[in-house]
Image: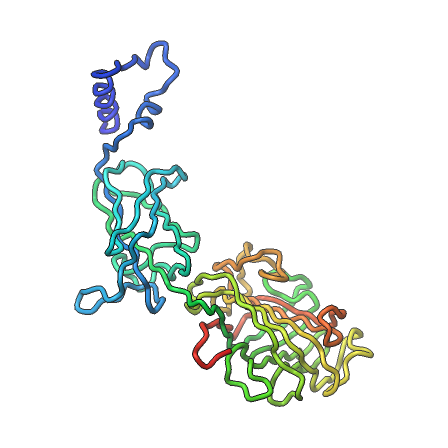
Length: 377
């Protein structure tokens, strides 16, 4: 009933100046259209709260004795839309990082979108279990749909921003195993197409390896399957000079929960490695792989989308060939678990033929992408 009362009031006001047409006769304009054209707000709802600098990127507004210890961010552009995507209003945060939209129609469903300033990424959303202290912004910069309860004000729609240092980089640690060798002949659900059973692990970008491999190391072991049984080392202490991780690239600023809160979700690293303990080998190795002697260019692609261990229930939205440089989708989907791929070439030339590749969503272990420390490359 309140909606119709509003329309009659608008019509009465309009009649005082320009006349109010009878919408039941000779009119092509609906009452709803008249309401939409009204240049002033008539609702009783308020939506707002705060944008803050999340210094430790934990997605929680830190407080001591009830006082906020992380500063608010001024001049951040905030826009309000209906959940259908219709623009409603725009404002900016004040000196304390606060914003507010008032006079809203309490019968509509809304979402709030924040314009990300240069040099920042959004904090992980919905951390800590408290509406009053968490960040409510998804990676697209908008909240979930907000369904008001009458005129009760909604003053807890917050956005945490993490500052990115100019020297953007990352390091990765960890390892994993594939899905227990229960292959089905396809890449679906992370199962390797060729039936290989493998484990892998190491680090990249962490300056903890001894010279001449200061940029980390990586090891991939193929235990059984059509590709044979062997170990491949890149930059490990047991590998000779000339094997190393030589290039590390990190990209896709953002956060995935429950993945580590680092300002990147994807990493590619490249280098030169060597085969060890070759007990059996596929035809592709013939004439090009000499155990403990030949050197081979390799590339590893990792997505830190979420914790592994659920490879057999990988959502259908997760592409079988993964993300990033060699995948069919550019950016990792946070609904997918960790993804791993290794590609090994015939020689040290990255344009030489590929002699081994395997990929999938690991069923065990953990791959974590971290921010750089002062000790890392």
